Image (cartoon, rainbow over all chains, first blue to last red):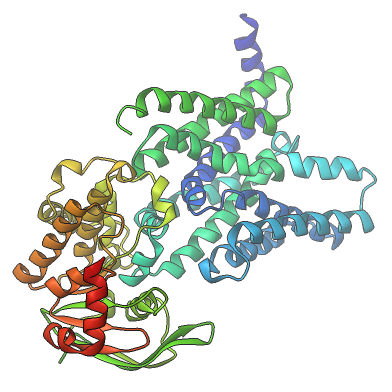
Length: 284
Length: 235
């Protein structure tokens, strides 16, 4: 078994492995932060929905032959996030239905556009790697790593800055609004942060598996911990741990990165569920 | 001037009018009970006064230096809160968020105020506990402590005893009455419980087919008062 450290040391010399680990840690940290809020707001599937929107936006970008598709994808995803999260409870189409509608719609339109105006011959390969992110994290360029770092720092800073406000708005929006908290502004900020996280995370696990990255750490942490702060910290740590583990395993065993990370998340969810029933069941 | 004055209010949603030409005022130190059947517009009235929705017509004026976001509010429980991981301390502290503005963290003075309100509600020993694991009565005390963090003048209570057993209900009413009498906090309470309304309230607002606003004594004498009271006492 001495082969494993040697193999890791060998891979560590390649910049793409270091880039992948760095980006993996950053993205998993960002995506776990708002997971608790999303699960509690009954928006667990927004990661899935918005990532399909981002997929649709990428398709539009490739049809228009835009070389750098990041700004366009980010803009469209942010607009959709705002439309979903800021309509609130008075919307004619409720949260889960609206998410499902946008998600399926964007996926279909994106695939349709790519099929009609496809720029490359290998369509199913393109679609597959966009959806599952099978290779893109291992082909990151230095500039992309920097962009990802800057955005992650902004996301984490914004979350720390708005931490108490996010709590107030999530726990009881009516009370917050009635006592003078700018709930609309904070919902808008939450929506923008989520959109940025999802566009970032598409690089790592692809659009289909983003939901897992957003909700699994939060759900696992909620099995064991009882306060908002401990749940948030635990889900961040857990998410980073699972990503590192997933990336290392996938390098050693040659499995797809995204699915390996999610598999690690699933295992940890069951571990935490077991812990929760053993220790948490006492004073429930 | 009164704390809150409502003039010729018309209320409703989606263009449908539920209440029209409603006028009443709440003065400092009063205890107003809002009673009426289900669907008569009690909750709509409350949401309108709290600024969560706009009146179709009419005015809501505040006086005595009360700003509209200085109303402490005890809402009914939402489904989200049933599985929300939050400690009692975090919930009570969030009552101060409205006074923070864009400031990201709470000051020492604000934390002290939260501690005082926790003591006033007699829930010091629950501070570190998880909110969703408390009993109904304990949860209401936590939410009352949070509401007190948001106000020193006016409390708005939306059916504060629904789902509580008789003993805890009585304790809750005592607690609210003490806040009204000893700390001079004005109370507006929505209630189904006419008996309690007549025992504690100084004024009654009855909405529905017949609208009545006046003192407790006048309500007992008025026609709708007696009909509704008998119904209430018979239950």
